[in-house]
Image (cartoon, rainbow over all chains, first blue to last red; front, top):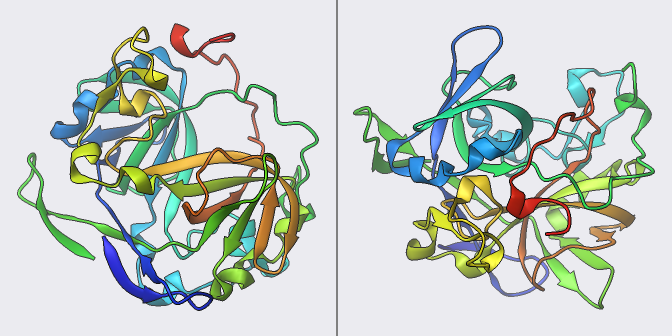
Length: 153
Length: 153
């Protein structure tokens, strides 16, 4: 678990962490998408069918290079008319840790397979985690977004 | 990047992925919480101040043992009266990949520090990623949750 990185702001070794894929995305058509867990993780799905929506965490594996993981600023949505923006202020698929997140509606849970209505991920993308979507106790109010991400953009 | 795990359902080596902390949680009082990025990641915050809310991804580092990462079913919220539930059907801090996610209101962004109104994480918890909270194009409707997670529970 311990890495050999060193913090610039403290002389303390930085850890690193190991992610293992729990399954993969299987695209079969234009709409529904299967999340097929490896068999040994199927027990972790008990009760998921009682939820309507799930957060799907996956890995932008096509961008897993040292170079792309060093990118810190982009023009969001690949549009150079959008202002240069930090990767932590947008959802670019390049970032230091290539975690992707989508909220999906669950269509079915059968065995080790969760079928969702839509998921913007390539076929065979590694899946990292599933967490049910829990509506916040206090709905998120007074939302503010930058112009480039606003309605109609 | 490539690990030495093997898939049970296909004779294909399974990759594993490396996460690096981008910063850490600093608790200073009962309410506001600082997310202090390591200096080399500060450029990634450009434009975050234009958002009101941020998804904070962090690592349940206190549970990073082989044993805890093998747990696939729990009684949610540590309450044995709640039904045994898969870790992918609840938000237990034990799971194969110890990714934690919270939506937080941004109070300020200054230099390499993001201050949020609340974050249920221990002091010094490693932070993995920040993504702005984008309201869904179509609000999440017809939400369903299990009884143990319902209102008033």
